[in-house]
Length: 545
Image (cartoon, rainbow, N blue to C red; front, side, top):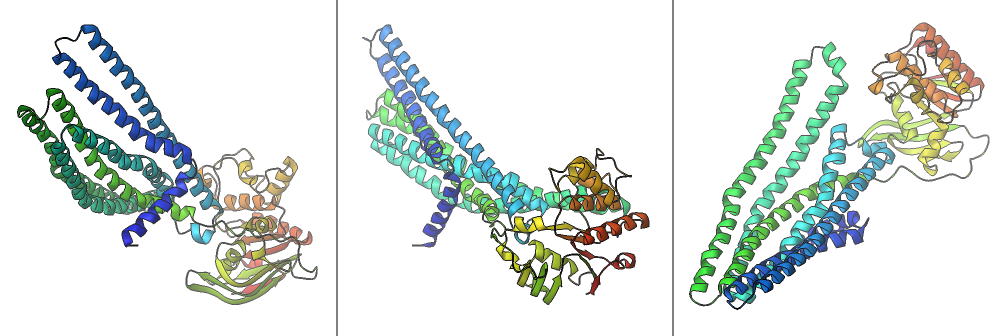
């Protein structure tokens, strides 16, 4: 098996993953459209031939001509109706396929391991979700149809032409082969440019999103001109690729397309010459010229379809990269270990980011009803310990929860037991109440008010206060306290906080620390990362790293 056969089989397997969602609909649309189109065109061409033939017959009556035209008209209506129905089925499948691809991408970005999904920045993820999903769906529908269409229609036309005149049929066949051969040049470069375009688009989108997200910081440091210059550079890179694609298309028009249309036009005088020599009748000349004009157009379209098929395969690969991500660990533990086991235990843990080791041979234990705090220089691995526990970083060794290796838990089950407040917590557009309810959507009003009070936020913000996009209407300290209130709603056994008091005033810090002491007395395990001496003071243990 040569390399081309292998590549063809791989491309086919990729498409089958999309097609198998609604295979019957796909088959009817893909095969039905070119077949019904061929029938409609042949009805028109042969009907026109018969009409001219009847006009040459002096004995034909007007009624016979009218009946012939009615028959042709009705046949065309039926054939065209079937053509439109199959075209609609193709569109229906394309829309359905795109929706399914987007749903799968969304699901994988939500449920896939952070170590995998974090490889795709916002611009890259959005480009794959929007642009690539559309092109991938088009590949298995429009591109396949337009590739099969010229073959079915072309073979039907060439067969019809050869039945009329074998020599003209052979000429048309040779022209078609030449057009397909020359198209290979354009297919190669179009695929290369399409990949460059997708990469340039993703880079532009990522910078644009970062600019919008950081608009306040950009203004504060007077970086508008610098960022604007970077955006313009990315836009120029994108436009440069689009210009190259436009030039390639223009070059194709003035070479290959011009050759195609010239050849189709030359078939008319050639057919007339055959007629003048008595090898063809006038009605046959009309039939052949109609079919020759259409067949060259269809064969030229075949090259364009194959070009799109190859280019859009890149988009299919890009969406499959995400769709192939495995969901996070779905193991499950039916029972916990011995009662005297520590609540949480690290055994010879080694935390990795790719090939880089950030923590090595770490062994720690955490018990119920204690406050343990980590302190140390930035980058020493404090947050990495937490990320390993939550499945956000790869690690070697063992992390045990109640005596059971956390790899035996589903990640969702484990996260129910652990509440985490990162240093920069995410805020969701909506009200303060909306954001807090992510901790427990079934919480009562009393539970909500209690969490707000314990997080020292109840006097500052009303529950119906709009936080804005990404919490833009909140200060850093308010975001931190809303996140703490949200974590308290979860009723987890382990509560982890990253710099919980860094952005707080002394009064708010005092309330938060009292809350942590209360949680400790309830048997919760409190783990915090902090550099603040006043916060370290309430710890049962401080681990310096």
